[in-house]
Picture 1 (cartoon, rainbow, N blue to C red):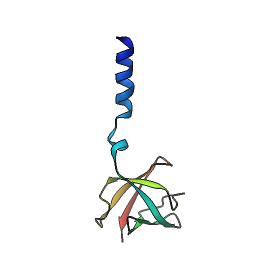
Picture 2: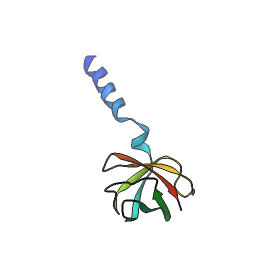
Picture 3: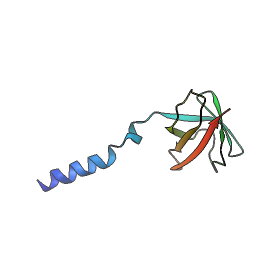
Picture 4: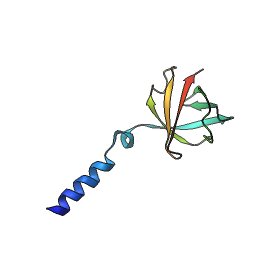
Length: 86
């Protein structure tokens, strides 16, 4: 019984919406502040230091393809960055 409870707790720890979210690749990046994602140009509201072409991101707020502000999560760097669409 104890092992079953531990297995359930471990499984639930990894069952987060973040794991099920759609990831997008940064297609182009310039100066830690301009990024092409899903064909749209996004500008950092400050800087997204070290974010590069090829990095995988998830839209935490906002939606890819809709030109609005967004909060991005960089999967590899485990960092967020606020951007807006140009």
